[in-house]
Image (cartoon, rainbow, N blue to C red; front, side, top):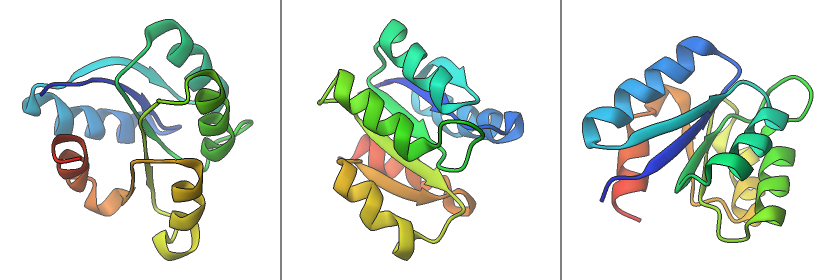
Amino acid sequence: MSKRILIVDDSSMMRKMISKILQPGGHTIVGEAKTGAEAVDLYKTLGPDLVTMDITMRGMDGFTAAKEILRFDDKAQIVFLSNLDKDKYGPDAQSLGAVGYVNKHKSRELLDIIENP
């Protein structure tokens, strides 16, 4: 089942790479944000089915943005995509209610999480 996805990452190259992974699977990229604050605003405006969220960004980080999104919509589906150590940060993501945590070097795993919940 195709999803409407909001991509959040401060790197334009990473946002393009995520799009290239997801679009062939029939998923639609409804928006892109480069900061946590933009992510919250776009989530409220676009109402995507899923958010891919970087953790380290200037200003509002990904965890804070996820908390804001989940405060707005407690059913929001968020997958964290980061180079930070999964063993160290994965539990934080899980405690927020994230549906997944993927290392950016293994970003193709996104499709498994999205298509096989």
